[in-house]
Length: 166
Image (cartoon, rainbow, N blue to C red; front, top):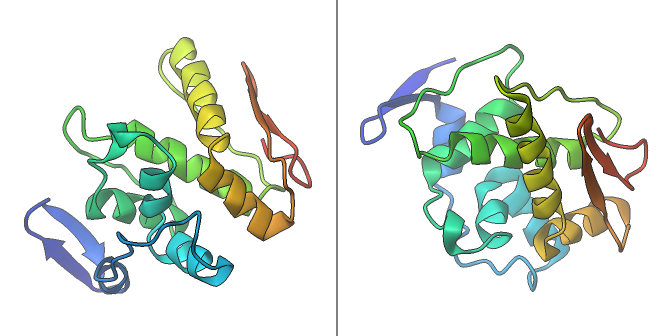
């Protein structure tokens, strides 16, 4: 895999991801676009779902966050995201896990944190993210489920997806 250095963020990414990052879906309204366009955005620039399904609190998401999600999706082994405090590492990871739970509900995912209450907070945050109209539309497109629900508990998340994502 050929690596390229993005100088502004000092991050190494592969050329395939570089091509994806050159696509821009900033102007797509995910609640009004076609199902095909929605899925294209979800596959190529998933951070746009995160941006549109949250308050302006996450308006600072950018290409590097999109690359983190794409790297997680395409990763066969573990890897580390190293970035400064306040760079939305945890929030990006929570969106990735929510997206993966929706995409692959047969799988189980393990979320570890050094302090147990933080892990539960992450589950609660992902449940809140899952209650948004953009995420509900994703579930409706993929599974034809109109009333997607996510419920947090100490051991993880409970959904009404087929095969119960957890």
